[in-house]
Image (cartoon, rainbow, N blue to C red; front, top):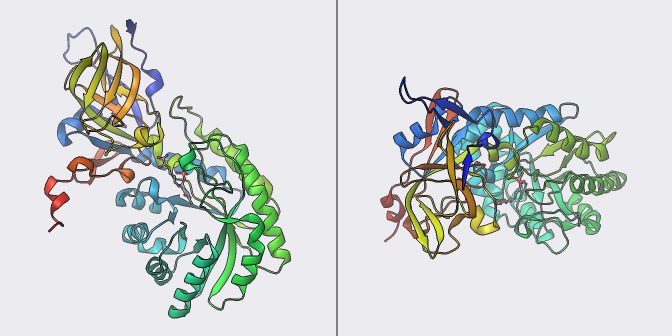
Length: 442
Ligand code: LLP
């Protein structure tokens, strides 16, 4: 199959864009090279090796600012969900832009405090199994809000707060029993899920919480799942939370904060360029049920801020054919980016360099990694322009839940991470060395 190159759909401006390059003055066929801002990805691969995560600072800032703009008419704090990408430099960048943070472990809490000690007062602590040590650390840091997910956890927090004689501000994370169309592993808002407190039991638990000396009831929180592309489920969940908050106020509680969680999906298959329009629609859906309530809104986006702002660069190690089926074996693997293996997630994969004018040969391939599992793949039966060994590929939309979910399976060191800002290139995490992986072992 032969086709002219049609690379236009692959751009993710302002982060990832194509530029034409002529190798020599007289070369007739220019090439299209995928850049991160002003830097050719081929240059980064040459300099830092592959697999390599590359992020665009401008894209992250722009996506955050789109959220800030969409919610500008209501008092709000964007608490970036650290689990999406927890690199210190990215946390610092977001903190400088005014972000707060949503953490789910003592580890994430420590990262945020290392990135910016002053961010403590904008931290919300979520998660279904916070340990006493983790809650004590958060109390010592003076975080904004604990999102509590069970009665047992509420009493554990009371115990920690009493010991420190510090007041803990709490919200109960309620489970609104709202269905959201996403992968079952990342849907959280139904009764059958482990998350939150059933919304109809919440008033009773709020009543108990308000009797505890070192707890201060301060809000209600909800999170219905991740990678939700429809807006309606958010509106429905927030409407239920708004009803609860009104009832709680009538019961005499002070509800200053409504935390609507994260979950706004991105388009992995057809990246729409109108992110501002999408955040505006999302903001209307979230704010409408809360109008007139005079609350401070907390938002916990992760993927929507960093997802399209990162790619995983990888190199073709071998071409191979088994009974007519073609494989590109690349040097990245499921340990570097597990989303295709774990959720069957789709990620656009594109050659970093392609001829600009001439026709390219298209072939159908599986893009697979070197790990010893058939689940180690990035794409099945994908149409790609023909690539040779040593050619570079970019796996797009890998800025969220890429590196943060990476592991050392098969004793593979995790990739380096690079942050590009215009013409500036910064290594924000060194590539691991094999000896880092066994040095703590006896
Ligand atoms: N808040 C809470 C309480 C959460 O559990 C999550 C995500 C977020 C906020 C951020 O959600 P986001 O805006 O990023 O959708 N590893 C999966 C995603 C897991 C999400 C877990 N919780 C993936 O790669 O798709």
